[in-house]
Length: 213
Figure 1 (spheres, rainbow, N blue to C red):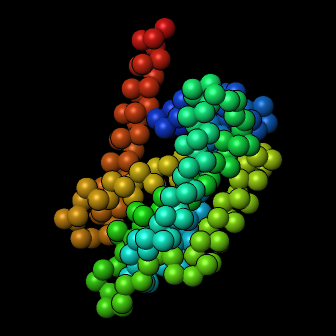
Figure 2 (cartoon, rainbow, N blue to C red):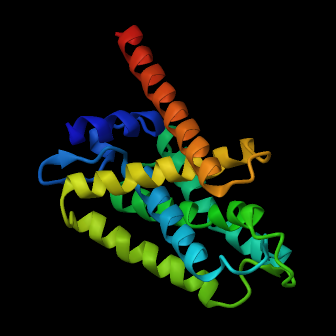
């Protein structure tokens, strides 16, 4: 049952082609290697920012740092376009790594928008020292290695990705409810919006597949 649930939500964000997905214990994960890397990266940076930046009034990265971060998006774009246009063949390790590079950048531009603006502390860029960049990247690489090696089980790995995806879309959905001041109520509404949106995408994907056949 868990397997079906994870693949239902995975279908909302991924084409789920088995040959482009990591295989653990004979089972393809709920999302492809590229999407796996993206959500590993998102999780790692969000985790770091949540634990080390939540008491700070942070802003988006400086222009120079933003330019550096945007360069990390390029490998996935090149790899994805090259693969889909058949200019060259990609592989799952490359998809995983370019996905990580892409994913770990995104929270740096989104999380600061939810920063504690009511705090009296002076605002500082979300990346103010090298560890703000290096630690999430290293955590991403370690997690990516565990996924590539198939540790621990496919259900745990699928659950990790699906929960991260629901949380990420919930974070984005929270911007729809600026009028809700109570944190817990806003969290509930955001997660419900995320689940509804992902369920709709998954059902639409299923309908399109059945229609094409």
